[in-house]
Amino acid sequence: MSKVDSKEVGLIAGLHVFNFFIGTKDLHFGYWRDDMQVCIQNLPEAQKNYTNFLLSHIPEGVKRILDVGCGAGGVATELLAHGYHVEGVSPSPLLSEAAQKQAGEGFKIHHGRFEDLDIEGGDKFDLVLFSESFQYISLDTVFERAKQYLRPGGHVLICDFFKINAPGHTVIGGGHRFNEFAEALEGSGLEVIEDKDITRETAPNLDVVQQMEGDLFLPIFNLIGYTMSHNYPLLSKFLRWRYRKKIDKLYRKYTAGDRSSANFMKFKVYRLYLLRLPEQ
Ligand SMILES: C[S@@+](CC[C@H](N)C(=O)[O-])C[C@H]1O[C@@H](n2cnc3c(N)ncnc32)[C@H](O)[C@@H]1O
Image (tube, rainbow, N blue to C red; front, side, top):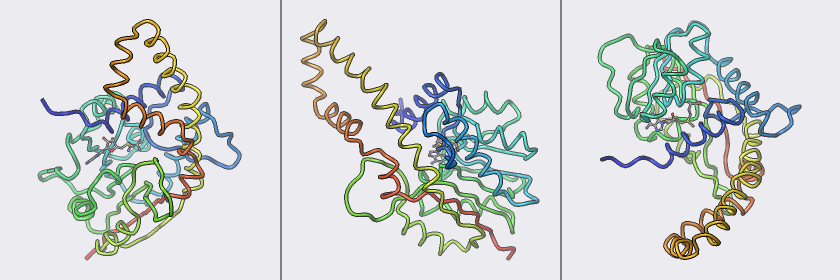
């Protein structure tokens, strides 16, 4: 039996928690306008702003979109509602199921990683979209693969964050190194049509997640520990001894206050890129 990817498990767990508490089925950051209060209750609105921001960068004339890493299908649902023909790519069976349910039976999903995608025949796409999925795909092949599915003059739209070189260390994970991305882009033969920095507008997401970890997850985690040590002292001692390193690491990660918007802005950059494949 194949192992389950812990990042995917994190995404699906997040999907259930956020869907249950605030009714959002989106797996991407929010776009926080200056006038918005940064709190969990406003996350759905911020995520909707993000989707609108994304959609506002789709060039005129685009009809067929390949949504790479379509998550739980939130963006695809919106694209379909705007009349686009959308096909998704999803390596996660659980997320594919959620996406199919949300976007409907008409949404065609190619199961598997983008790196292994093999669409035989069929029309080319006008746009290949990477909404916060770009960071999961190898820089060595991502542009070549995207070009393979694009018609001449077609576009690539990337909205995602990258790591920048900054002194110090952060536990905020994810993102390709920006200089390596820039190098791969330079050699890709794709033309840069738009390049927008939305780090400031997306960074507040970290504060929301940190609030939730501190005010919800940590007290529950501590309560479980407290109950275990009183009601099952031997089992509790054994588990603490057996998983000491993992527990300490998790505890440090969620209590250090490192996962903040300030640190996101220090160590990451969030960019939207609209790229174009030249006609010839
Ligand atoms: C943060 S979620 C973004 C989901 C969605 N695009 C959105 O904007 O809400 C990242 C997505 O990338 C997908 N993914 C991870 N590795 C991938 C790969 N190698 N090829 C294609 N998709 C991948 C995950 O399954 C997940 O759907």
